[in-house]
Image 1: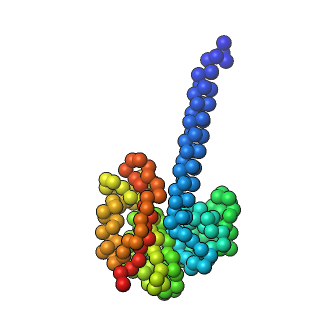
Image 2: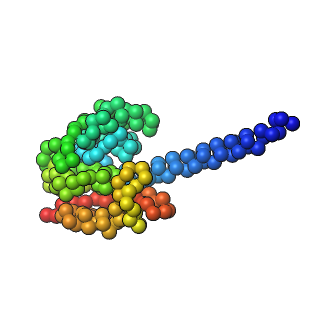
Image 3: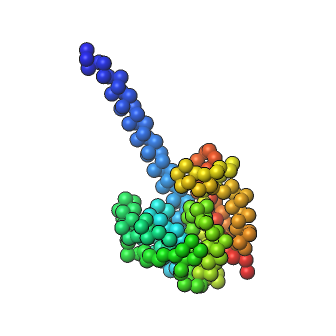
Length: 215
């Protein structure tokens, strides 16, 4: 009889575990689909000279790098404590080990400059970073400086339908699509292409843009 008392508890535990597992599997599947769309949009080639701005721990960059194992990347950030070989190696090991840490060269800048060479890169990636930039205009101007004449800037951003003061996770406010596009226009960037890469079905969604500077 005493075992029957605990039966509802264990049924609840098993049910909760199953629901959490299904939720995780669904999230993993959606995340994989999102990065597949992003990678296809970027159309990376080993011949590309690529800089990734605001890499952090490699959450966005490593899955993209896995889609082109022969590609090499200049990794740029302002924080060497979170953005370093150890952090990216951990992310590589957790995502299939298709790319190699030898494919990444680390550089550190400031909130206003990348400290990267001028006219160097044909593809510059800025993923989930714009909304966190303190000096957006200064950084976008510096990113245009490092871009080759016929190069493209690829920006992927979390956008919101309705403005929110701060996000619970990153503690920064996200932009609406109208605000984001005004920011690009105000910094002399033209959108060549755009695509939704993920939609939560709620207030947030993610879009990727290929941008070029005004001639």
